[in-house]
Amino acid sequence: MTAAWPAPDPTTAARPAPDLEAAAWPTADNRLERGYRALLLAYPRRHRRRHGTEVVTTLLEMAEPGQRRPRAGAALHLIGSGLRLRFRLPARRPFMALAALLTALTVGGFGAAAGSWLGAQTFADLPDEAGMARLTQQAGGDETLHSYYSSSPWTTQTTHSSSQVNGAWDAEQVRQRLTAGGWSLSDSTPLTGMSGTVDDTGSLVEIPLSGTRFTAESAGLIITVMGWDPAANSSVDIRSHVSILAMPDRTAAFLPLVVVGTAVGLLAGWLIAAAVAYRMAAASPGRRPAAVTLWGGALVALALPAVALYGNVMRVLRDGNAEGGPPLTVHTAFTPGEYYPFGPQWLVLGLTVAGLVVAVAAILTARPGEQPPQPRVVPG
Image 1 (cartoon, one colour):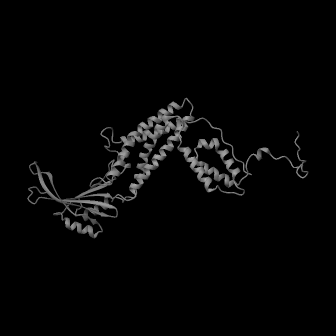
Image 2: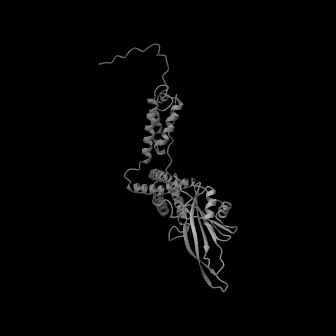
Image 3: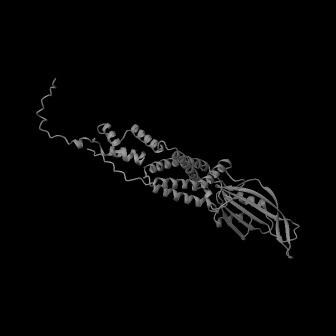
């Protein structure tokens, strides 16, 4: 049995044969190809190098004539598929899954610190030295001003001032001045205490003190005012004095930013761990053990700072503010201080820097071999 082929069309028989290599590529608008390649950025780089041209070619073949932009459905599908691949870990590697979990938790703590820092930028600014001098004078103090700033690994920064008072300290007069200045005042609380001094014979003398304490708030700034008077029958001449503690009030944006920062940090940590895991899987056998050891060392170094950060997160969620003190924060765990009963005051910050340096060394050590460049789509 033979097949009968139709006779050639004389109008086309003289046409040259098409370029088979050029015909293998779809023709499309350059903007459409750029749009698809931009969407492929959602995929990991290793996937783009291996399958990017194939995917773009297929999408261009499926495009409608004259189409200039990717359709919304195709764009969402590409982005979703790319993100799923970014979160995926190498198969049959349980230790990498454990390392990814630890990395996500660690970076989550640093994300909480970043959110806390951003939230603290919404706090009211503390008064400078001149501002504290004005406040102290409003509170009845004289020109003998002593002021300083203080910080801790748990709370935001505060500023303190103290001054002597000419005569007896009049709490009611101070309250009237602050109210006239636009401050909202709390009720007064009576105080009692003792002060020690040395008399003319060099002996230590204890003097009973009575005082008043109240707080005032204005424009997101809170001040605690305490004034003290010596007992009227004191045998030693000692002057009255007043002190002020100024701190910012916690804003409504602070806690959401801490929560969002923690969530973003957890997701970013998993993405980083997945990327590093594939990078280590592609590294040469000679480099892989060193890279794995370095990454493990980085996680060990960052473990203590992460615990400190999560400890501050729990305090923020549970207490909000230190009792009678400034707002609790997360990022201040990096402030040098006695956060732990062991090690130097810069322990948390020092371990953080060391851990990040070792992590970078691990990534550089796990450098994969050279990959062949992917071909380009040649649009018509």
